[in-house]
Length: 315
Image (cartoon, rainbow, N blue to C red):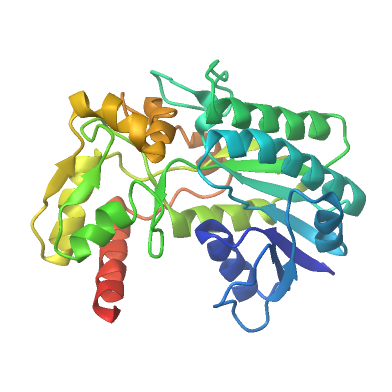
């Protein structure tokens, strides 16, 4: 396969996918607004603002495969403005190059569900960020059905792993425990909640990029390991660090007041359905077609905990 793999976005997900592809001998081009300070030798960097159509088209030129791992600030207004524009540009690039395109997606578009989520679960009507994700999902799926692009999506639940900081299972959990402090949450922590291990998700993205023709044009849900509550995740992580499983939660009665003065709490409230009930992902379709040996959750949490401990010791 000639050409290079273009990865839009070099956050934790884009980085993990880029590393896997490079290790497999692929030529990788990273496209985003600023050059990563730690971009590995051998990876090409292309300066690109994804809300600029011309820059996206230039970045994708010559691509044999495209990965969309772009992220925007966690703000509904920014998402509503930027995501539809960016997706239109990605679709134009995919159509112009003919490159198979994989969207590393989340699960917001399904909204509140009381049964395990599957690929064919209907989207729930829900405003804010979930509405944005529904809209851009419909954009690429329409283009795919019309034969204009060859595109699939890997939809991933909340993920964790070494280097994952900006997450409910990131700095506020692993980072604070590593620093000898209490994990902090502004969401309920006692409902069973499926989470994905980022190295597994990067492996799944690689699998889908290499998949045969009949696997394209599809939605695939990332399979998760054994279901745990967030409280149980804290307990496992603390044990791996030799720490006490201390937890601080924002009291429910304070949250309406705090949402008035803390924008991030308003944004988290927008997707409260992720945590206010049991949250299960049915990844059977993926595991039946490809592989099922996801990392056991105790192993993944242990590896993540030790990585955060090393990072804390290096500061």
